[in-house]
View 1: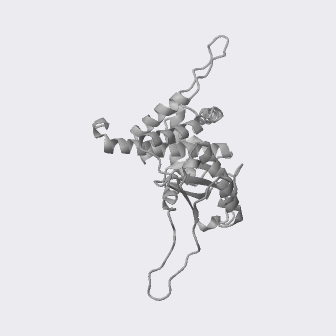
View 2: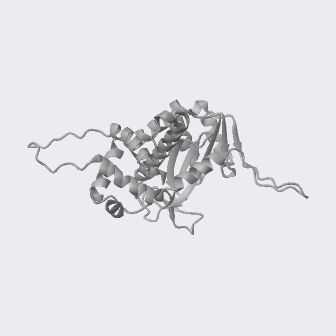
View 3: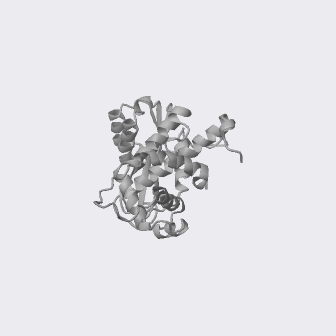
Length: 284
């Protein structure tokens, strides 16, 4: 998988390491056990995210360099310091500066997945026999680049996550540049119209119910410009912990979503460099 490409991992870690806060040593004698490497803890988190395995299996797959307990503690420490939010924001900002976001067409959609361990931010899935699941709602630009997202239980309809998703887009300073917003027919209704008015979005297209032409004419399935967000949801679903999450807190799921998006954008920036600046790309 591309997330295990050494070039992608090294590039992401270079940005990630710069955001990790330096831990102050308060031991009076300075003789406690050596602190586990941040890079080794990051490797455990990456393996778990990509494969969807347990923390114990991720520890084994990375050579038992650090324990699963240490990796979990380091994850919580980084979440508290806002490292995962920052790396995702930096990836989006870097992509915008180098390639450029195309906000003329923006699409929003949700993606529902399993959460067998339950916990905060989960609910009964309406499409999986009421089993526990979680859902993310994401907004993407015309090329499928994520620009805002949130997460909640599987029992929450997409329409109730729209406001939180657009708030994330606004927080990044991108909402004013949105041209046309594309939504599927699940968003149709007064709550969506009120939300769009509140966020100052005048041009929004909500898909209509599918119709068929009479006679021998071609079938019409109006989809609009929603395919980029559908493709992005498919990209993110390739990560094991995204499609079957075993965390117990919403903050943990959002941290993994941040990391998956940062990986996705890092790979895209490397591809862009290899295409337009081949002199700087490594010899393979």
